[in-house]
Length: 291
Image 1 (spheres, one colour):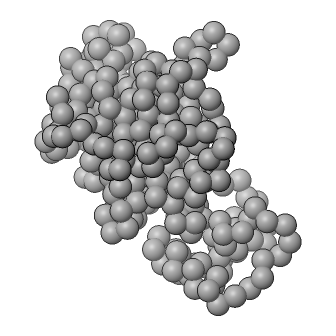
Image 2 (cartoon, helix red, strand yellow; image 1 turned 60 degrees about the vertical axis):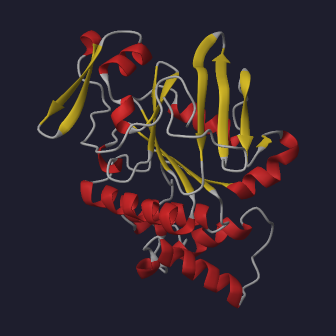
């Protein structure tokens, strides 16, 4: 199925076309296909070890696919376009390894997103200060701009990491498990920030998670990954017994329990990606790109 006319290269910021990855003879990803347009909020969902991080590494150019193509803003990704890809894509890692007593302020970390790849001390300027301040406001972190990063809570650190990635004004924002180990309130706050960025600034957001419950109210599309394969579409279209059984290669039950969707796969029991209620209209299904 599709949600209408196929997207053109002009419409798309990112397209993965038939991505395969094999490492040491082991198949990690097989025929992964999806596309993302400006302003879309896409959840990269699946259990740990399913291949989500490998997909992010392929997009970032850190892992070469065995076959298939990554297209950024209408052009194949390659070494010759490394600098351009860097300006198009912002990346938020899962954790920030900083000691609590390290004298690094929030505004310093965010400023490194502008000139952290240059040698020497950055020259202070009004324009730079205003850019840092505006970016911190955009993620709701301006209230602790002068705090030490190591003293922040997990949710506060994630906002700082988002600001660090955002300050270069990317068109596509990739986030690797940013909600891991956060309490419900902090996770909801991060999701609200990302949804606002997508909606108001037309930044495409691709966020990996093993639990899509906090993402359910704002997701436009799911890329559900299991066993190295991906089912792509709206939540209503992907979270079905027939689609996920094909994806897992075994029978999978999709159960609705107390307002949640629980996935039970084979003898291993409940899949870690236990999901919340979603009320989206169907668009694309297993095996295809974002229609």
